[in-house]
Image (cartoon, rainbow, N blue to C red; front, side, top):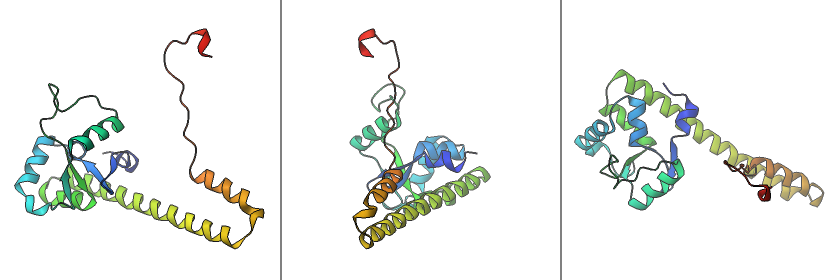
Length: 171
């Protein structure tokens, strides 16, 4: 079973909603993606558009680049259909369609991950709001302190070294 951290890495923001891919959920539930999607299609009434939706080609391409997979849909051995994605409510509804013990246990962990993610986002918003109020309350003497705190809240992107052989001119 994956940890909440592993599950968090499989939650993506699409169309303003936090979602999980059908393939990731199938792995967690220990079923084939095809079997998961078949069960969903048999129970379409349980999955309205705010619980589940199919990605567009543009969304799939963007997500594929973000994740770092190279297998395009049209290529041999890839998926024939665009992926389905499930919102938090859709993941909860999956537990009514997939009734194995593994699916139930995986579903509990996924729900915990969504709750922790929501708590983290709320905490960060409350911290930013409190910081804004303090900044308004105090004058410019503390401006540098507030700037430092904000920079800690949004750490800079880490520059990664290029992999490969470097020539003497590249240093």
